[in-house]
Amino acid sequence: ERDNRGSHYYLALYWAEALAAQADDDELRTKFAPVASALKNQEDAINAELLAAQGDAVDIGGYFHPDIELAAAAMRPSATLNAILDSIS
Image (tube, rainbow, N blue to C red):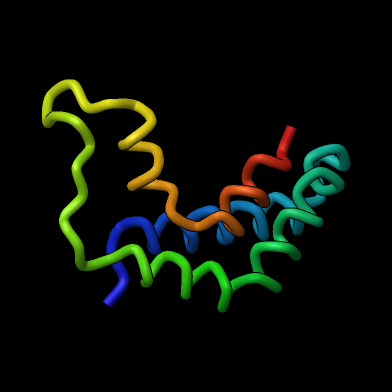
């Protein structure tokens, strides 16, 4: 069963597709069309990476003041999704 990290993928896909499909802003459409395509094309790989990260306890270095790097590693376990999102400039 997918956790909130998986839902974040589908939220990103929804918005990328919506921005790529809109007709009011050509710059946004041009910027997000390849992002939407990459997210859709890599759906199986991204879901596999996200599901593989589930089920084990994760130490993020504290509850109220977590270690940023540990928290990022725990909350961004898909290298494929991270690369696509990081490509947006």
